[in-house]
Length: 180
Image (cartoon, rainbow, N blue to C red; front, side, top):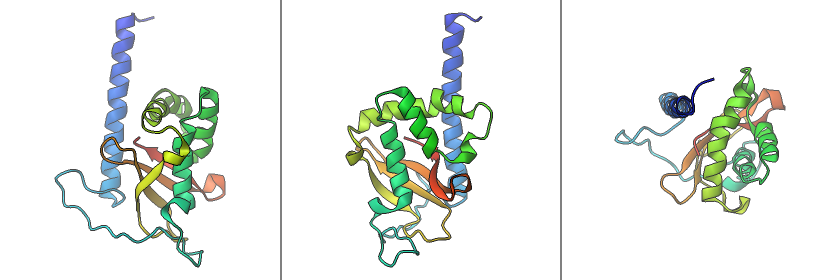
């Protein structure tokens, strides 16, 4: 078994690697047109249309759309007191594609969800405080497969979460990536 220093160094390297993966994921999404350009890049024009679902006659408010609700539920799950309860709810709300690798659940608990739980507790006291700053695309129809929801938290730029329809969950909206 390695020394305590080796363990700390390995942990620091893994956390740095996780940060790089988050950056690469954001860059890929930006290149695919799912995210705004990095700082200094030309900003794509945004519209202030409400999020809507083509299957509904009336436009839904941003907070009422099932894709946005999934994001708010996901962040709220990170606020649960007991780790076991949080892990179960976060797993339920995570896209099945993100859980395919043999150790993916262990990785999520050790890194992504651990960071999410720390940040969610720092930013929010309850689910009522979790609000989207913006949603892309601004109009969601039956053909929309991926939505990016930027969660406002009052501590800098809003944090993006990507939610997608999940065939493994009967087409329900599930979280693919989280940068909170």
